[in-house]
Image (tube, rainbow, N blue to C red; front, side):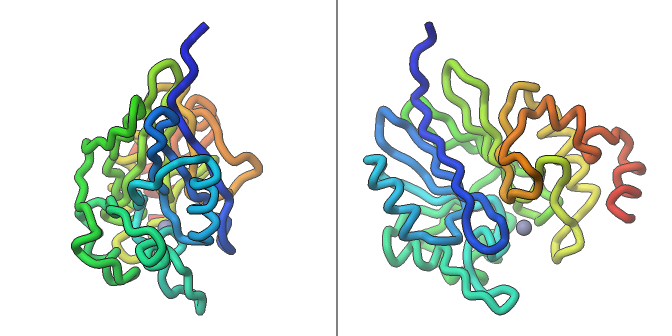
Length: 233
Ligand SMILES: [Zn+2]
């Protein structure tokens, strides 16, 4: 019998653009972070409170409004501004797009922690490893959630989806960088890693990396030239 995992992990469908928000933390220390709390912030805080978890931070996969809040497509998405009003916590964002995050959300500099790839956040026996995975945006990051006695979970934002990957035709998008993020970083994680994407763009909400290496065309393609062709470049 293995020890019960310390990991607290919830995937929550949210908003009008099929986003997923995540609560990740330690059952032992009762600390958790919210990943991309763009929608229904009150509901997320209620969920954490109902689970007797203390929200100690917000993690940003990237600065698009459907992940952090702001104005887009005629919508006002509450996001981090609402989070800071209700329950201010440090906001962890990759340094490449911390300025963009401030513009989109209005979050003040004193609330922001500028992060680099390789940084870690420790919550009890749970380690969250920040992987800098540019391509969809310059400062996109994925979160590798590790705990003893279980497979790691990869919260992948808009970098890798089940069966597809993030678009690169928005400002700051870079198909070559995305290729390297997918093939040099995410594709090298262990097969048993569980993939938790930033949107529900397929029938299932999560997958193993083994399954994606076998079926996701953007991971299956090996040559950069072929990948770029696939992406329409
Ligand atoms: Zn995005």
